[in-house]
Length: 206
Image 1 (cartoon, one colour):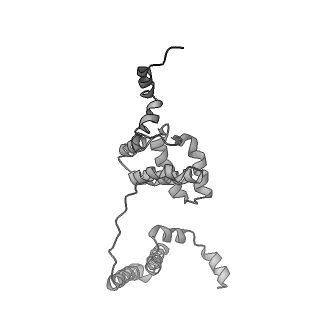
Image 2 (cartoon, rainbow, N blue to C red):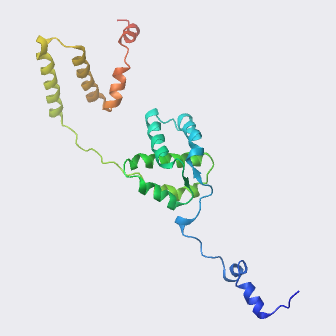
Image 3 (tube, rainbow, N blue to C red):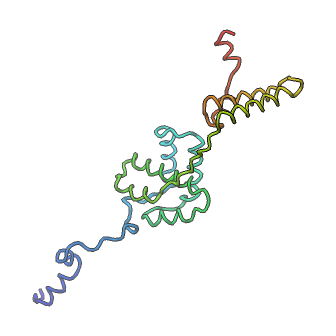
């Protein structure tokens, strides 16, 4: 065994891991460079994410399709190991960033549901901030609404000598539904297209 000398002690103390014991913990890596507990590999998570979206989150088919489309486009064949990886993915998305952000935030919800610790996901969520859409504060007054209804009624009544086509009556009814319910146009159209007049007549006894 070689002799122990003061110089040798200094060399060993200043070497890792003795240096950490002597001077305290080493400087942690910047947050953006710290690795996640596990790499996020979309290709491996995709099938389980779709199942979670359908059965647990119960997203609409349209919303789910949009998320999958953007996640496929930007995450396929890639790994997210650090926050910097996520920043790069967002920076590369020039169009439809809001759709990608929503997909990523739901992916993080899925990971939390799967057992990922919340403290590991919180820095990722702070990076993926969804841009708030502007609120439409333009609300027509009663006079404008009545004027629109009268204009449509006059158009329909004056055409074909007062005889209304089914299409004209349908759009007249649709406008009234939107006015009375405050429903979105897309939802009101879905109700109209799924309406079974014969079934309603049988149930009402008319």
